[in-house]
Image (tube, rainbow, N blue to C red; front, top):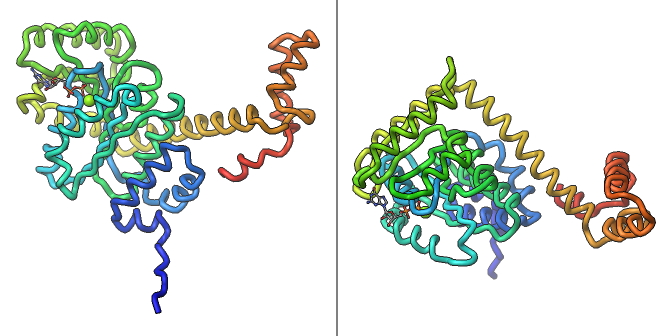
Length: 334
Ligand SMILES: Nc1nc2c(ncn2[C@@H]2O[C@H](COP(=O)(O)OP(=O)(O)O)[C@@H](O)[C@H]2O)c(=O)[nH]1
Ligand SMILES: [Mg+2]
């Protein structure tokens, strides 16, 4: 008689080193699957050991090439590495992810390396949430380092990388994008600035300009001053310098600083998830407010001549006072 073997819970498999569990859990995170929060509750005690590095910058700057080199560098130290390539543009083009896949191919046979591409199917807010979740999964699995690559184009991407302990911003000469980055706030999120493609003309100049910009903006006693590091990821030169700058930022943070920074980020995560859930619950197609949906109720109030502010205030007060009707999906997700 064949007795069906009962599979261990996914969180248990994750913590026992099952790579399929990593993949499955990240998919759940991506889809906002209700099973994810339950699994997280089980493996959350294991979260917090991995070092988290965010790599961002304009498209084509060489982020993927650099990540590949950094993975190689970490492997020489026998550290295991989880890589998450977040690309919001991929649902439309598909190209970027394919390129990254091929570039990373040499690493994929390494059992100590795990590479996962992640596309944003949902809103940008959802992408940041899913990325943090995916990092937690790889952390609990036991990777020593977790690297997140994302295209630095806007607030959503900053949200994504800001979950990392250290953020590397990659720029390169000859692209107007780099000048744009200096204006658009990319410098503010950088803990380490990398001028990649230093085999190309203009690299020295760009590094000098960036150094100047950094000192004008951020110089201050006791504060971390973002270093500008030159390298050529394509040729594999200067990678040690990049790695060293990352190490120095970690030392600067120290154990207490790291703990504090992570706590602050967790508060941000709770705020993000709570907002998402409240938003979903309030605007769900089920009757919530005075026997009708919130959207319909708002319509009625508008027709009756109320101002948007008055209606919004009433809605906020109703939420705060727990006056909206039962919200089953909130309970289910909790
Ligand atoms: N000349 C030169 N090209 C590079 C270097 N690093 C990367 N590239 C090229 O720049 C292009 C974009 O690189 P990629 O890593 O995909 O950039 P990403 O979009 O930022 O991830 C590719 O064609 C790389 O081969 C470098 O150090 N020097
Ligand atoms: Mg890339």
